[in-house]
Length: 209
Image (cartoon, rainbow, N blue to C red; front, top):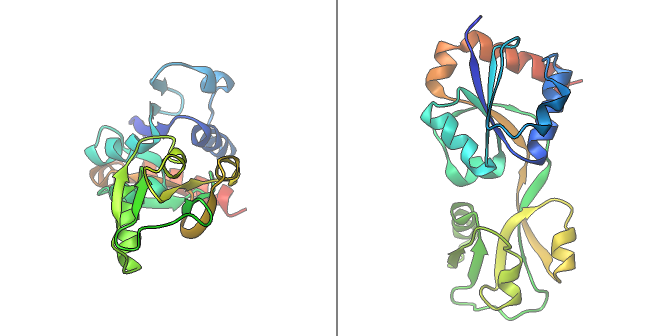
């Protein structure tokens, strides 16, 4: 039980919500934790090592084994399809993936252009709908694409819908609900099963209250 457990955490809002969840589950995390600029933080008392990463990279760190466990959005897991165990839905950072665009805008019936940072999710979704589309991969400001004629539709994460509204876009279809999940490296789960299972149990009690 004294071995260090390495946990990859996404920076930003998910990080803050996840820390609060861990605190509620009884983990002793210092209040100044959120303000640290360090990318690796060791908490000797809890035998936990936190690695702070971009949300899209967390699953890769866990899959490659440099982190034993991690917290990743379902959107990342759907897009990257990493070879990891998905242990628990943490029910935090609620949002969803949706298709959006300019209301009433013309669309190329043969092969509409879809801008997104989720090319695999978008391709899979439109294939299921029996639609042939051209996917354009972007890394940010996806809402700009239909406004400048780069694409007719976008596939992106929607939280409140305010960003779409402010840019004159409307939601057409909802693809998938998204929350943050606790994931584990397959080898780590076998080697550190007791530590990981304890965390799952403690978090589950808080989530299911």
